[in-house]
Length: 284
Ligand SMILES: O=C(O)CCC(=O)C(=O)O
View 1 (tube, rainbow, N blue to C red):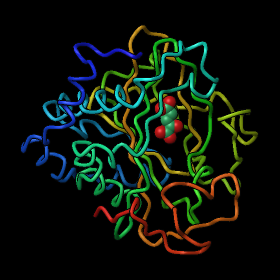
View 2 (cartoon, rainbow, N blue to C red):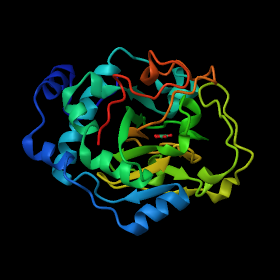
View 3 (cartoon, protein in one colour):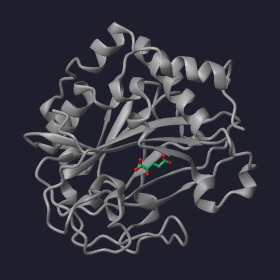
View 4 (cartoon, rainbow, N blue to C red):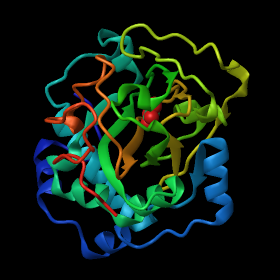
């Protein structure tokens, strides 16, 4: 079983049972003002680095909450890293946490973060697409280069964005993300099967990647159309990342690709329907 300092199942249950402290809740909903330059950078480069998206006090709490949820989700998985599939060696993936754990819902529904997504996408309103914790184990494999929206049945992927928040220090040697700037603007994007048979996209030059190391509480936002990956975790510490994915309000369910049309967030929708399900509330 994975281990976090001073955390066992009983303690994890307790942490997730208690309500989010008021100052933390307040912080999750306090605006983070973007400069015009940051918005322009995101639009042109396809990603943006933002310092201290979560302040130190709130992060100490949030890290514990996410660790507790990951521990509970993975408690029955006793496999060593080498026993896992290549995909699973890239990260421990725990999705849709906000629907199981109220303290995580408080974070995922935070207007501070949804407001950033809205302003970067220049949308009127944004919906939740889904959340997921992505922890890279010590010795964990690199994350293969891909674009996120190729796994999502949405009609306008340029209006989707991922928040990737560092819960602990994420330097290059621990598997920080790297991006291929401007690749969101390419005319065609390749589907990369990161689950079974990854390949390196033809349109990219390997050396053009930009690594973005993060301190705890720092975050990046990257476009659903931007090619990116992450390095191996060469350290003996877990790389702890939490993500929230947002879509602009008004996007439609595109069921044309059988590989992704069963996505949980689109349950019950018909091809062409506006995406508005119990998993995709308007956040701001
Ligand atoms: O955390 C990782 O290693 C990869 C993250 C990623 O691909 C994403 O959040 O879109």
